[in-house]
Image 1 (tube, helix red, strand yellow):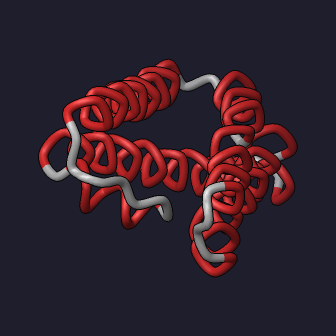
Image 2 (cartoon, rainbow, N blue to C red):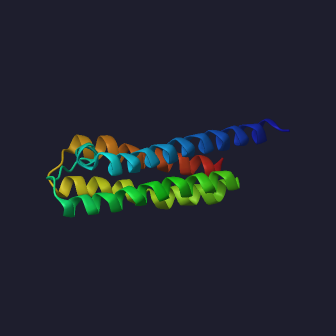
Length: 133
């Protein structure tokens, strides 16, 4: 095996592992939105008052996060670097939109860019590793 091929395989492997970290993280965030919805909303960057209507919306977010993480896991198990790379690139719209939502609803720039922006940046890098590696 050539040195270039080994390097590409290493880059792909790192991309897979980092995608797994993202998958696990988003599943855990979803679980937190089920178990402690108001605390999770504060950590997201937009606090809400205790109210059954808000809890319904937070539960919607929870299940979508869990499903997104499980979908990443399924694609990882499929071992298709390009499919995973394209999914991660397209899914970058989620943390970018999350950052905009935080800013629009009075959250801090630190949360918007430090959490959601950093996640989007990491996802773009992971996508590159999978698509180009």
